[in-house]
Image 1 (cartoon, helix red, strand yellow):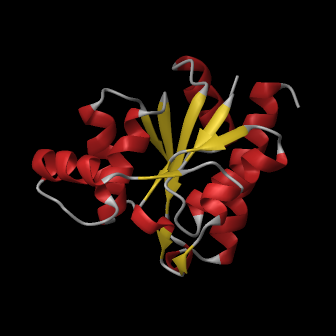
Image 2 (tube, helix red, strand yellow):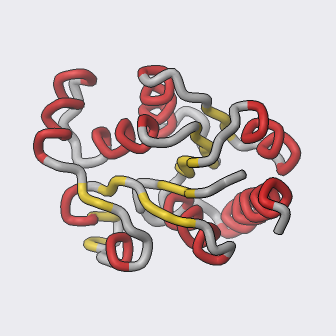
Length: 166
């Protein structure tokens, strides 16, 4: 059963995961970049509506040492892979820097990862790995077309409804 959905709060898939969870009355959370920065600027709804926290300076430094990357997004990506039971990644670009960073985080923490599943595959993935805290990640809004956004939302919503008996 999915008890919580976390994400990094970026526009697009991250935010969609939080919205789906809220619609289905599932707890939300996760770690966002310092200042709750998204591609559209600061978004305090991530904190106020969805319970995300900011990555700390110490965490940014820790993951910069581990990964060699000191950008504002890498540390929160690794934290969310660490703090979840597994990650679903929805993307039109399977080789984006974000997908590579997310996969690397899952590998670092030995967490299961799945990319672009259909409903049945996502249900099987969640059940097989006994995932109760799901990290939802993927394309930011500017990289996501409306058709894909609709399809990814439908997959996530219907898989969670099936798993949680909603």
